[in-house]
Amino acid sequence: MSGGPLIVQSDKTLLLEIDHPDAQACRMAIAPFAELERSPEHVHTYRLTPLGLWNARAAGHDAEGVVDSLLKYSRYPVPHALLVDVADTMDRYGRLQLANDPAYGLVLRALDRLVLIEVAKSKKLAGMLGDKIDDDTIRVHPSERGRLKQALLKLGWPAEDLAGYVDGEAHPIELAEAGKDGRKPWTLRSYQREAVEAFWAGGSGVVVLPCGAGKTLVGAAAMAEAKATTLILVTNTVAGRQWKRELIARTSLTEEEIGEYSGERKEIRPVTIATYQVLTSRRGGAFTHLDLFGARDWGLVIYDEVHLLPAPIFRFTADLQARRRLGLTATLVREDGREGDVFSLIGPKRYDAPWKDIESQGWIAPAECTEVRVTLTDAERMSYATAEAEERYRMAATARTKLPVVKALVDRHPDDQVLVIGAYIDQLHQLGEYLDAPIIQGSTTNKERERLFDAFRTGEIRTLVISKVGNFSIDLPEAAVAIQVSGTFGSRQEEAQRLGRVLRPKADGRQAHFYTVVSRDTIDTEYAAHRQRFLAEQGYAYTIVDADDVLGPSLPSFD
Image (cartoon, rainbow, N blue to C red):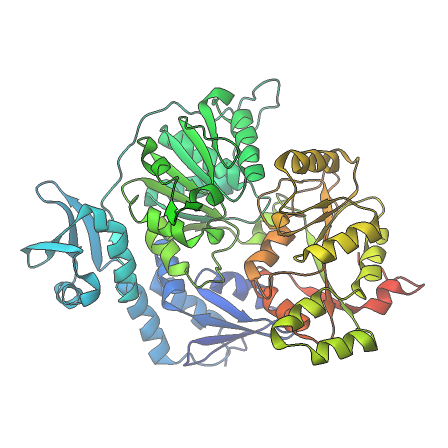
C-alpha cells in the first residue's frame, strides 16, 4: 500500500482525499484527463470519460503518462482492467485520420483497416463518405468534414484532422511589443506564447486559460502568426469593443482595419468582430447574417468564451473546417453537454494552464472564496415550503434576508471596488436601492454600460450591481470583491466567469474576495455546491460561514 491520496475504482471514479499532503500534486497530475464530479469537504470525486482522455491525448498527453499518474498516487492497487481501458480509449484517437490527398482531395484514412470497415457501415455516416479508394482510404465530401468528425466522435472513433487549412486572404498583422502610442514595451508571457505555439502546431483547437490571464493576447498573437483576415466572435458588444481596444493597443492594426458587426453596426473589414447574438438572430425563421462567414476569405476564426457558443454557431462552424479555428475559454464545461461538439468542430484542447499555476506566477490575483449561509425568516420558509418546485430556486435565491448580509460584506471592504452579481432583475433593483448603487442589466444601453464601467474603473463608482452581463468578457481590473446573490441554477461555467471578474492582478498585490450568499436548507445550497465544482477542481476552497458572523458586532476577519 503506497498510502497515496487517490482511490482508483473500477467504475472509473477517482476519490481524492483533500487533507492528504500529496493531494495538491495529485490534483495537478490528474486534472488534464479527469473530470471533477463532486467536491464536498474531504473527498473529491473525479471521473474518467472518453472525451476527457481524448482531449488529453490531443493536448500531448499519452496513455503511459496517464497510467503513471494513477499508479503513482493511488493508495491501493489500480484495477488492471481500468488501466487497459484507459490505454485502449486513448488509442482510439487518431486511428482514423482526415487528410488531403494530392490526387483525390479530402479523404478518410485508417491506421486500422477494421475500424474503417466498421464505421463505413454505420448509417450515421450516410451521405458523408464517397468512393472507396483502397482498403485504407475513402473519399470524403469536403462539405461534410465537420459533420463527419461529429459523427465519428459519437461512434467512439474521434478522427485526427490532418487535412490542413486554407491560408485565407493575407493581411499584415504584427504584435506591437515595442509599445505603441506612447505605451510601455511589453512581451507575451511564457504561457501565452506556449498556448499560441500549441494551437498553431495543432492547426485548430481550444486554449483554456483562467479569466484575467490574457486570453485576448493569445488571440492577437495567433492573428500575428496567421497574418490573415480574421473573424472574431464574442459574447456581446461591450466585449467586442474591449477586443478592438486591445488589438489597436497591442498590434499593428489601426481602427480603420477593425470592423464591428453587431446590432448597432454592420462593418466588414479585414478584422471583423461579431457578436453571437447578431449571428443567431432570425427574421421569418431564417438566420439573416450568415453571409458574414462567407463575406471574406477568412484565414482565422476566433471564438471568444467558446463554452458559451450558441447551438446554431456549431451548425455554421461545421462548414468552416478548412479555416483555422481558435476557441478561447476559462473552462471547457458546458451545461448543455455539447463539449463533444466543441471537440469536433472547433478542435480539441491544445493548451490548458491550471489557475493556481498562473496565480503562483503572479499573473492573476490570489482569491479567497467564502460561502455565507443565511437562514430564512419563518414567513420566507413557509412561502418556500408551499411553492411549486419550479419556483423554489427563485424564492430561495432572491430572499430579502440576503440584503443586509450583502450590505455588511460591501461595508467590510471600504477601500475595494465591489461587484454585486445576480440573475433576477427584481432582486438587482432591490439591491441597487438598498446599496445606493447603479445597476447594469440586459436592457442597459451599450453607451450607458460603458459609461458606468469607465466610472467603476476610475473609482468614481465603488459598488456596481450587475446582472448576467457580468458573466462575460468585461475587463474591470480594479474589481477586488465579487458578491454573488443568485445564479443560473447550478452553472459551473458561470461560477468560473464570476470569480474571473476579480482575478485581474491588483497593483498592490492584494487578495481578491469572492462571496456567494446562499439560503440555508433550500435548493439554493445544492446549486451552490454544484456551481463550486469547477473552481474546486482548480484548487479553490470555499470557507462556509454563517450570516450571523457577518452581521454580528464582532466581525471575524476573512483575510
